[in-house]
Structure formats: structure tokens, C-alpha cells
Length: 198
Image (cartoon, rainbow, N blue to C red; front, top):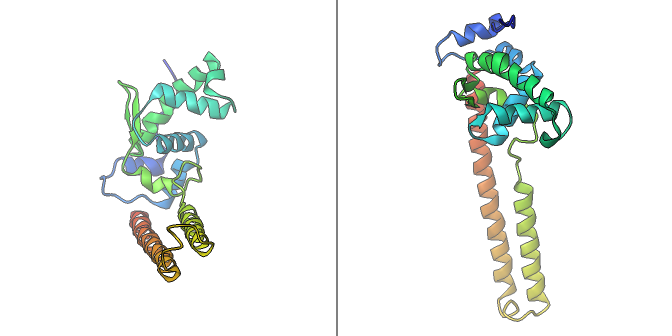
């Protein structure tokens, strides 16, 4: 038999035994995030954005830990991570309510409480705020249209310059409005998450 300790730290155990509506304290969140492998599990699940198998999760984490590609992993490297995830890490994360782990089928997905931890992770897999690309696109398109009309490109030179400039301004106005609405929704979402933290 294995002598691996699968008990949860006291701070996490108290949350795992509480109602689902219970708030997570910052102490519990940081206790959960102090384990590097748990952070790697969360980062991978966030990137996958779906249910994954234990095998694929173990392979990717083993590749990250050994600074290599999944195809270059040895059998021992895969097995070491697989066993640790199967026996220890995933059951504890499931008990803490951070992941949904079906041990019999080997399927893992993020739980509803995982979003409270995600805002503390610094991963490249978080969806980036790419509004700069939209603003650059509108700027280049607007400048191209106005420049083409100014230099007499057929069709565009027939349109009034003031009308083209107005179209570019309206495009910026619509883009700015969409950006403001998106930021407002994101702020409300973050505020909602923060309200669930003690």
C-alpha cells in the first residue's frame, strides 16, 4: 500500500467540508496556489477550456517540468507525474472544489470555484486584452481610405472627404463604446469574484 498523505491542509479542508455557497478566504486561495503542480494543472485546464484526460494533462505537465516537448518525454517522466496527479494532486484539488475529477474515467475539468484562483495566476493562457489590434486596424483602414481619396483613387475620390472622415470618426466611436462596455462587464465580473473572497 502507498503511504502518500492525501489529507488536505486544515485551511482547505474547512472549505471542502463547507457549503458550496461558502466564500473562499485569501488564505485558502493562496494555500491552493502555493503548490506549483496545482498551478500547472489550473493553467493547462484554463488553456484547454474543456474536459481533459489524465493522460494528456500528465504529459503536458511532465513536459513543462522537464523543459521538453511532449514527444521527447521518457516513460518514467510521464509515469512519475501521472501517478502523483492520480493519487495525490487531483483528488485534493477535487476535494477543495477547484476541479471536477472523475477518477474512474480519468477526466478533469475546472469547477465553478476555479475562477477565484485564475485571477491570481500569471499565465500566458489568459485571454489577452487585444483592443490595441482593433484600434490599429481602424487607424490603418481609416488612414488608407482618406489617403486614397486624397490622392484621387477612383471610386474613393468621388466620395466627399468630409464623409470619409466622418465614417472613420464613427468607426472609432463605435469601437470605443464596445471597448468601454466590455471593460465595464469585466470589472463587474472581477468585482463579483472579489465579493466571494473573504
